[in-house]
Amino acid sequence: MLKPDVADLKEQFILHRIHLRDTAARILGCRQRAEDVVQDAFVKIYEIAPSFVAQQPVAYLFRVVRNLAIDRHRRASFESSLFAPEVEGLDIMGSSDGPEAIMIGSQYLQLVSQALSELPARTRHVFQLYRIGDYTQSQIASQLDISTTLVNFMIRDAMSHCRSAVRTPIHVTWQPVPPGHSPS
Image (spheres, rainbow, N blue to C red):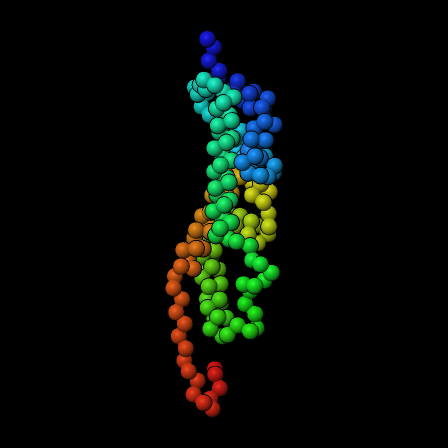
């Protein structure tokens, strides 16, 4: 019996690409994210050592895509729970916020700014493109000629670093202004 080799695995991948994408899309609920998963799966298959042998290559391909899609779905769920979209600007400090809230917000902003400045330049750039520039991870990967997996790890590392920075307790100390004196 002939054992399928890596070249055959790549051929099977190409033959079943549409079905692999549809499998990922069913898990993710998004055809574009499914395309990203299929692309990541192909990179993994392409990087497999030549000595690798899959007894059932098609089943193996579907398992790789399914696992990557589940991982991507879990990661997206986790990120969305951390960064729930703001509803109609309700969390933005307004002029009606007291000076204490404004000061605390300013201190948190300084902590995040400091944390971002501590990151490697490329990680900071990826994070800014993703969080501020509204680029997708695929767009960033294409623009910087790196894998979407690396982009995801860089965003995760930057978020983790920023979260650690803002977990530092902020203490506000007030100096009461005696009546009749102006604050300096």
